[in-house]
Length: 342
Image 1 (cartoon, one colour):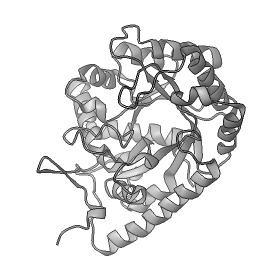
Image 2: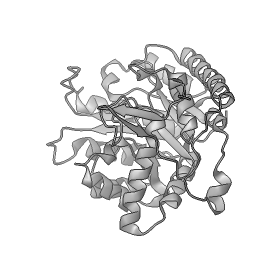
Image 3: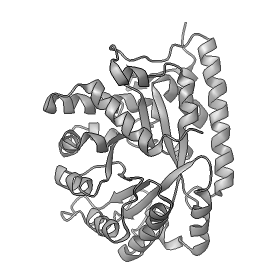
Image 4: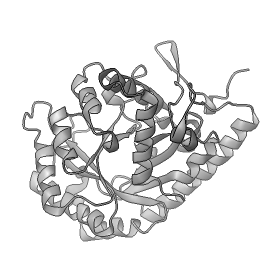
């Protein structure tokens, strides 16, 4: 019997089919853009991720980019969660088997595993913030909208905020003046510090920028404004070990996504292998950057087990740590930051 495509964990690329690997431990997707899908339904994506072993998810709301207020987004997210619950009920009633860890879990890792995919639905939250693309439009009114969103019971932090010095040729987006971006980042970072909430940073510069100026400037903003006691995350990390270590010295977490599995990104994998275990996170940044071997497809949270498998396997080959224990440690980090029970 063929699986209903809404619940399928097999993805096709160039006439080949790839089955999502079994999770090593509960998985958290700490950065997912559920409103940015091109061809996917958000509720179905949530349901598939639950079947794939995702047990916590953090998504993003931006009052400028998403063109809706926080209350409307809250209602929309609640609606997707309710629809995902109905979909999971249908899937389980039809005999769809959720993925289970391939090996025997032991100790705390075994205790943490919940075989009921519905467990994800109580651990979905969102971050509120304005992406650096929106810096020129960041007014007092927009700031008030972000501040109001932080009171939502589904809001778990501030983000994604930061600095983007890259010219986006595809969408013809020029980088806003750097000082303007730093001022807007500092203003939103202050909210996280004052509210004791975690913050996620988007930092990007041109590939030939040897000074890594977005990271250099962000480091200085963090030193001046402060790192929230609740945590700071460098999302979608794509830099080298030295850059990772500099931010880890500030206590920042480092989140790795599908791009870290790309063949050319040896430096990024080296940073993952060297990062302190208690500061590691996984994410998809969906719908962007699906991991190998399905790179090029529209990414979704159900694809994150490939990233976990590739990166824990690489780190294990370098450090000798058990891949499942690495995955479990990352799960604990994610829960500490974003595991609010709804």
